[in-house]
Amino acid sequence: MKQALIVFSKELSDALRDRRTLLRLLIPALLMGPFLLMALSGLIASLEERADKREVMAVGIDTAPTLKNFIERQTYVVKAAPADYEARLRATTLPEPVLVVPADFEAKLLAGEPPVVEIVTDSANQRASAGVGPIRNLLAAFNRERASLNLAMRGVSTELLEPVDLEERDLASAQARAARLTGIIPMFIIMAVLYGALTAALDSTAGERERGSLEPLLMNPAPHGALVAGKWGAVALLSMAVALLSSVSFVPAQWLLKSDVLQAQFSFGGPEVLAFWLLQIPLAAGLSALLMAMAIRSKTFKEAQAGSTLVITAVTLMPMISLLNPGGEAAWYYWVPGLAQNTLMMAVLKGEALRFSQVLPGVIVGFALAAVALAYVAKSMRAAVAR
Image (cartoon, rainbow, N blue to C red; front, side, top):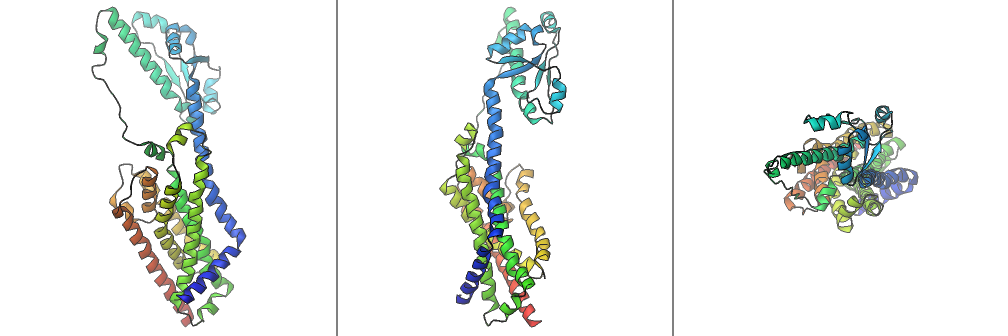
């Protein structure tokens, strides 16, 4: 253990000495996630601001005073659309859908014929598409009012139009509703764990081999297990440190959210940071050892980087499985590195209590992966000495 601690101190000091590399790791880990979260809140805030304005952009609305009067009674403001609204919608320079009213609207309405009203938008224009729902709801309400008036004039009860009263009841908590928008946070924490371990793992194996310092180190009388444990401890500690800083960075980021709704629903403080950090320990242990095992056979640092891309790709794609399977969380999720941590962190964001049976599989797989990978690294070191 004493020899392992000596190697641990040496590897940790070497990693901290390379400040330029540390900055390249820390800046994305600390800033990329919070910036994306604030950008998302800015988009939501702009949609909320547009909803508060209650404006409808229309063409030909003056030929339909009945419809215009109804829209204005709903406290909306009717504005004339520009003449080139179709071109501007395609160019995404017009962020509002356009209501197009035919010239014979009133005539057909009096004759009992349904006039055709268009809502013009462009599905590639996301801001314009988001405004289609309120206009559709307005037209549906206008239809109900006209139908009710027609029935009342004929002495028919308007209750026949809606024989069933419909009420919606959302069982999701405020945190769970916010988690639909803040689900990017676990992915960035997992990436912080991965990239925090990447450089240190490659440098302590392939980097030392390239510099010619690995073979002299192996010639020392210290057991190879102690050397491997010391290197692995330093790599895992750096990975956990970057993950902790990345988690903490989301605490001040929530104070800068522009959306009032998201700010009220999203709660990320000390308990969430601690839970996220503890959940990453098995992942950091397993990934650190796996990256060292991938790099120990490489002769150069660049060769080790190329070999580690498989691990990087696999881990970063794992959280996507839950997005492609919205039907629920399968039991095998908790046995897959990366996917297990993403699933558990999403539960923390939703305010759900974690069960021991959910956390245990990730712990078992993470440390089992670390044990197998470290045994392979020690075996490779013994083979290098024998040669």
